[in-house]
Length: 397
Image: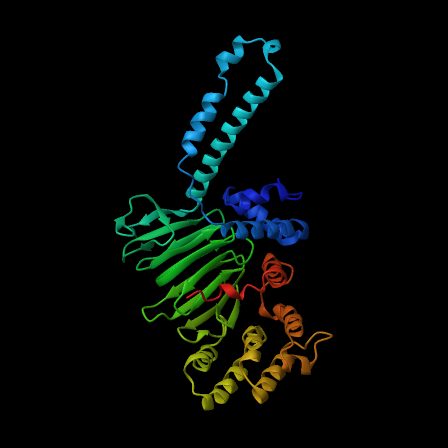
């Protein structure tokens, strides 16, 4: 169905009016097709502009005008009994104008009804176990989560949320989430406490999850996200990529990797799950606990324990250390995977964005996953080229 361009389906896709399977196929097409992706961005821009249009109340005389127009329009029986030759030009023109006026007014009512319906969006929720609550109401089998409402599970209940037509979120026991926004250009949850698992099949940065310590921005993926009673978060990605961010601090987390985040600090440095225990402990202390004078000793341990696969962590550390420590991180990375042609030592130490990106493309081959030609990398490049300026979505609180 989508072997050719999908321009005709983009409006329905943007408004969540296609099936999950269609949505997935369109999203995959958008990754590889510049023409359709450009058109998709134009439609999203139009939707964003329309969202800022004021809502104007209909005048009190609208119903009277509609009644008058309908009364003036000839009915079917009258038209059937007349002969075409008896219509004068002026009479035909008047009848046509009446019908047109009636249709315009009815169309206005339809548009107003559609606007009111769309201004109260919701997501479908299914009970998986126990008795989840939406607001103060205990669910039975199905429910609807409206913008601003909380969904809560106790120790024996679970629920599944349909994120429009772009994915699903499973809510674990003892979890509290709120629907913040749902519209064609942004779907957003707030995870106050507990654990959720998301599976998203949409272009990057359409689905966000706010937490007390940062925002998880989907890049086409599957992941779990946990928040404890202190607001400390833990992200684990099982497919694709997720950007975890707070203000100007961001971590890019690929499949098989984990990243912690703390209130007031933001995301730590991502690491692969099979990294050594001493590596992970030193990294956690470096990110969240150590005083400045202790960071050099912790960095010694991180660099000593690092493997080629851990260049994911070292690549992030380049921008989080200064002067001589940055030189040490660079040299350890270069010993594992030398920079590609065109990437210089001086450029990396000065955090040249293009050089860092080029080196990361090469580093991905050392991470043990098939990150090069796969869909994950296409998601990431799509995000970098078209949506990398969306920092305004990072921390709405």
